[in-house]
Every structure is written in C-alpha cells, then in structure tokens.
Amino acid sequence: MKATFLSIVFLVLAVVVSATTHNQTTSSKHHNNSTAIAITKARSQNYIIQIRRESKLEEFVHKVEDFFENLLEEIADSLGDLISRDEDGMEKKFQVHDSYDIGGIFKAVGVKVADDRYLDRMSGLPDVTSIIPDDEIQFDLPYAEKRKIDKRYYIRHVVLPNSSYQNNYGENKTMSPVSGAAQQTHTSYSANTSGWSSTILPTSTDSSHKSKPTKVMASNNDDDDDDDDIKYVEQSGSDTPWNLVRISERNKNYSLPYTYDQSAGKGVTVYVVDDGINIKHKDFEGRAKYGWSTFKSKLADRGNATTSSYGSSSQEKSDNTEDGGGHGTHVAGIIAGKHYGVAKKANLVSVQVLGTNGKGTISSLLGGVQWIMQQAQNSTSPILINMSLGVPKTTSGAKALNEAVEAAVEAGIPVIAAAGNSKCNACDIVPAGSKQVYTVGSTTKEDAIDPNSCFGRCVNILAPGVDITSAYIGEPDSSKVMSGTSMSAPHVSGVAAMVLPYLDNPTPKELYKVLGDMATRNKINGIPDKRTPNALLYNKLKDH
Image (cartoon, rainbow, N blue to C red; front, side, top):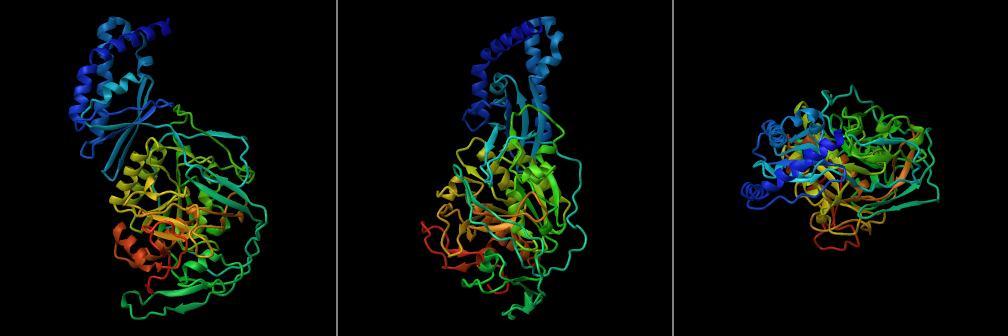
C-alpha cells in the first residue's frame, strides 16, 4: 500500500513539475546570468548546491527547506488528505545535511535528493549558481603493495565538529642530526594512474639511528639586518636524504650535509590535506596530530556509496583508519620529519579527506578546507596547507573544488599544491592550475625534470620528487621510497614553514614571492616547456 501511495505521489509530482517547466526555465535563466543551470545526475543521489558569494547561507538553507515544504503542499493539493499518510516517507526523499562557508567567499549546501525532478525546480532559486553531483572521485594515490579487501569503511559526509584545535603542542625537543637510515632494496613497485602516478620502493627500517652533534653555523650573508638572528645547523651522515641536501645548496654536491635554519619551522602548523597520517611514527616526535577526518562524520551512513579497501599489508597492522594508506604519512614526513623532513620542528595536522584507495568526494574536501578555516580563526601562529593531490579540471566538481581552495587563499591561508604527474599542462589540473595556489613540479637527483611531472606556466617552482625516502604507515619507524610531484610539494611546504616566522604577517602572494626569490635558477635540465620556470627550491632565507 505504501509503495502504491508513493507511486501516486510521484506521479502527481511529475505533473506538477511538468506544468511549471516553462516558468522554471525562464526563472532559472533570469536569475543565473541568462544561462540555465546544467545538472548532471549523481549516482549517489548526493549533490552540492553552490550559491552566490553575496547570498546569506543561513537564509538560503531556510529557503531550501521552504521550497520543499511548498512542493509538498502542491502535491498535497492534488492528493488531498492522502499526503498526511506518509509525510515522513516523503521528507526522506529530500534532505539538507551540510552547509559550507569558506571565508565568506565559497558558499554551498549539501543535499540528498531521491528524485531528480526536485533539482529542476531548485535550479530556479535566485541564489543558486550550480548544482554539482557529489559522487566519489578517484585521486589515484600510489601504494607499494596490491591492496587486499580485508576491511571496508565508508566515506562519510561532512559534519563540522564542535572542537577546538591548539596550534602549540608543548615544548619542541632539541633537534640533533641523525644517521643510520633504512637501506633500500632492489625490488620496485610502480603505480601508474591516469593523471597521477608515483613509484614506491620498499625499504627496511632501522630504529637505531646514530645521532651526531648539531653544528651551529652563522649565515654567510650578514648584511641583512632583518634576519641577523638566523643560525644554521647541519644534518650530516651518509644516510642524509639527498633531496634535503639538494635544496640547501646552490650547486649539486651530495657530499655536503643538509643545512637549515635552527628554528626549523617551530611554531608553524602545516595542515596536510591527504589520506591521513601515522601520527605515532617516531620521525614526528609527537608534533603530528589528528585534526579532521571525513570518516569520523556523525552522519554515519548517509548513503553515499563510497567504499575504500583498507590498505596494504603494512596498513593491515594498524587499527586506526586515520593513519590512511601511507601517502599522507610520506608527505608529512617530508614536510617535518626529524630525519626525513625539511622543517624539523614544524607541527603537522592531518586533514583526512581521502580513503586509502585515493577516493574522495567534493564534500569531503570542502569539509576539510572549511575545518581548517575554522582553526585559522582561532590561531595566532602561522599556518599553511599542503595539497599533494589533484584531478583533471574536466572532472565533475573540480570547478567547485578549485573555487573552495581559492577562497581559502583569499582568506589568507597559503596553499602549496602538487603539479601532477600526467606529463601535461599543470593548468589542466585542479587545484594546481589555480593562480592562487603555489604549484610545484618534480626534479630528479641528477637535476633533471621528472619526465612524468606536469609543466607549464601554472608551475611556480620545482623541487626534488623522484626516489624520495620518508616515513610510512605500519611500524613506528617504517619508511618507503616514493616518486611524484606529491613528494615535491611538501618540500616547498617545509621551506615555507621555515620562512613564515621571519615575515610580518604575509599574504599568501607575498610568501609565494619570497619562495620564488629564494629559488636557485637555471640548474634543471630537460624542461619541456619554456613557460615552466627553471627555479629549484632553496631553503636559506638570508642567502637570496
């Protein structure tokens, strides 16, 4: 009987919608710059309704609720008293579950719509600029082993937690250079995907690093009175990662130590928007924290059929899904690991927007970025975002993602992004193609461009990205060798973390300029595009 009733209801709904199609289309064109909104059907029945910047989000949510109530009334007028029999069932056909306001610039509402005809009516609301399907997107993160489907969990949609985040985690430990890193085996695993690829070499781990005394050096350039307090220390030893040495020298010489500012990014927080971080890894020394996770949403099973296979053999050893699949941990290690990292005293916060299979939804990324914005409002310390991920700009929802990231930058948060590994123009990748983010291409140990790196005018700087050793999931001292622009971007985030404390509340654009001015010029070979800057990342602020 219930099924029959609902069939009658939606038959009447179809008549109601059809009867107003002409007026609806006219209204939609009038309120949306004379262009009707194109709507692509979502497999998950979840959508993101983006609204105008000047619109008030709370008022729009009420408008949407009123819209649905009015629609029910139209149906009720046609069915009479029958509508009262299953009002709850009808309401389940349309739900408002999330709202997003990123810096007062990007505004949207997440909805679940069981009948697409509601969307046709909704597109005529004057505030609406686009209606985007919120299906899962493959971001194609690389992993060493073939994943086994041992456990599954669902990508939840966004609920904004009522939580506070402290940027200061207590006193940082005194850093000493370490040696005795893991030895690399000869077996390699490659993961090549459409648009994004990386290569991973498994490594054994060795927790018995032998530390050498820290050597403090004065800068070679004492003419810069603004930075006279900068002192440099060394990380030496045969196991010092080559990539760290390269960014601390103008010329390639791997017999030298890694030298860096002894403050090493202390007090700066880098938000790692990725697939999670193994925060218990020894290389993080307690400076890494869980922040926001799409898997911790209180809207447990909202119905977006996004599932993620739970990891590699290393991941199987971990009971905490917030560790992710290893990609985010590797990225975080490059940013701020004690041994593997650029800025060895910076703080790390995991913003988990992707599953271990590299899949995520636009709403997951919107929720993560919005959460960072909330933390920024309460922070008095420098922060930045690392995004070692991307999708082709033709991907459904990519435009909204790009606009959300740009909104965060406009609100004052620097974003460092990977250029991509599809050998294409980085302008065709989101968010790498945005003028608002700082985009990083990849180089090799031989000072050549990574043949898989994206290139072009949207690339801002180059950094080591091939055969990079860093922290990984599994054991507290696990490591892996990985390759790709995903590894290049965190080098830049690390240098940015070291530079920020010396700048006077810079805008993202001002920080980007300093990073570019510091870069080593004309050292990289094989760049395929003249518009790609021949600028290699350099970590010494005083020497530029």
